[in-house]
Figure 1 (cartoon, rainbow, N blue to C red):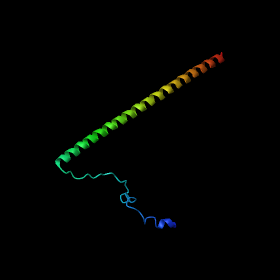
Figure 2: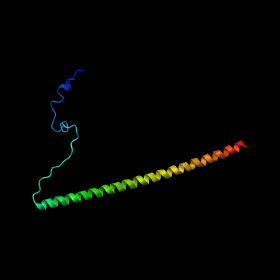
Figure 3: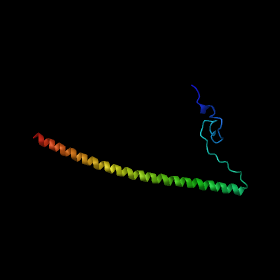
Figure 4: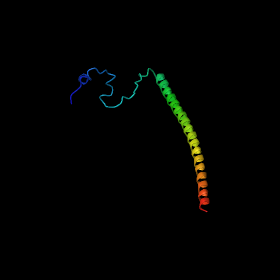
Length: 106
């Protein structure tokens, strides 16, 4: 198959950003490199920050999950209630039709 005109020069002008991930065939991962600690106090502050951040993330995740669960449960209950009402109406209609059928048979 012949190459089109634009294909011959397609890889000639690739920037570094465009080439990210080409070597490993994997998506690039975010791996921030923190500067080396300046002192023992700096290490302690960094550890405290990491603990606070992790705790906050866990609390946020729990809150979001709880809100989603509450919302889904409410929607499920409303839908189930509506379906139960429809089933009740259908059952009443079936009973009425059975009675009409029995009346017509006499």
